[in-house]
Length: 156
Length: 282
Image (tube, rainbow over all chains, first blue to last red; front, side):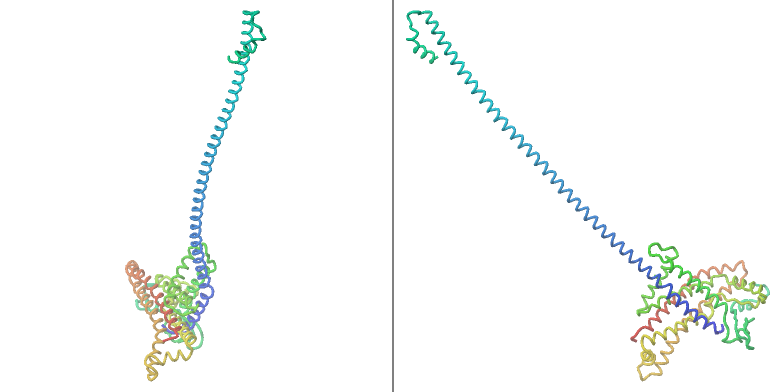
């Protein structure tokens, strides 16, 4: 219970310990803690930003996808339309061509008919003349009745 | 009881005597062999046990914490670093809560005070006879009479220890009072309050008592609590060995609370006193 030099010793020891703590223990630990706090805060902020960016990217992708789909649908619709137009055109051309061919054929046919008919007329009139010649021999002058016969053959 | 031939009173006295190294009245230095010799040495003596234990405990604290501080990792703190950081956080909260000034010394001061006192108080939980008997055996090996080898294990039960700390605090209070308020401001605070300048002697008396009460109350509170706790452990140890636990165990469990509480009170008051020393307006 005696008060003695221990008192002084303890005071000096206390001062030394406090000095040591202040110099070598407190600052590095507090700095490490502050740095960790900051890095955690930064990390959380970065995570938040990443989340936002991800959401934005997803939204963009969805928009892009939707617009692409629309475009594809448009393209298909256009293609359909164009195909129809082409088919219609082809049909038109074909029918016109067919008509042309038909008309041509018909006219050719008509010509053939006329030609054949004329030939037949000629032959008939020759035959008639021969027949009449053979019937009438002398009484009928071929030259005299030729006009009449050719009139007859025309009226056939 | 260490030995059957001792009386209870001798046993208690033996436990309450510090291992004292000092200057005998005839001028030579040496270990006191009993309480009377220690008393005769007066001021020129050291309590080797108090100094030794407090130094070792403080060094352990500083060594462990300095190791943690040196290896302080930002990304992957180890278990011990987490423990240290939780203490730092606790101290920092307390300092921020009570200390409004700007002084980078206050927080380390509070940390050192708290941990050192906790460690020294914890020595109280070591069974009362272990270390003293060990010291007697060792002393016997070196040729000393075992009955004259004293050892008081708990430094905070030595008023030299508690006053040593509180005087350190007191010097800091004086230093920062003068530094922050100026000498005139500090003297003014001591003399012009609470009654105004016409009651100067009364003011000086009141404020002087107020000022001196700080270190005295700090030291005596800690000393008194730990001394009383130690005393109860010693009394428990007077019982037959097979029943001692029935008293010493409950007291030890309760004492854990006192160990931490006293250290906490001491630290908090240190912070508050430092805050008062830094306040410019009264």
